[in-house]
Image 1 (cartoon, rainbow, N blue to C red):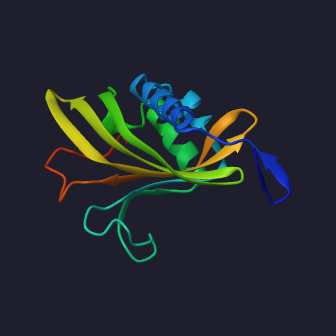
Image 2: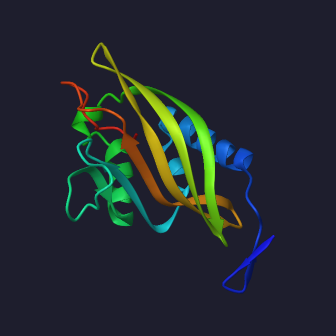
Length: 168
């Protein structure tokens, strides 16, 4: 147990972080968006920077996704409705997570990285999205929760038809 800001916090293991990421992948592949949303703390962010310069902040660079808490909730609502025209019917996805690294824990917050491949089947075609997660999590009584969910693509560019109308 560590102490941060006067509050005792338990130490999180890499295997616990792996289990969290695998459970998240299962929720997304099963399109259980409300359950996925419960993995976030209120006020969290979700980001997918463009492939040209992924390490610049959103204020000076392009982002495919740069959602604050309200936009994350709106994205879930849209994906569950018929209003998500690009995802009606929904894409079929299969996620693989590897090379999980618990980079740092500071009290009840931790940083982690992991590699991902998301295979997406849509309109008779298959696209693969490869990249790296750079997440910030909070340790809560209910388990780990996202403060920042960041997916950095390892592509030089996205091929035609490889739109990001689903959650990476």
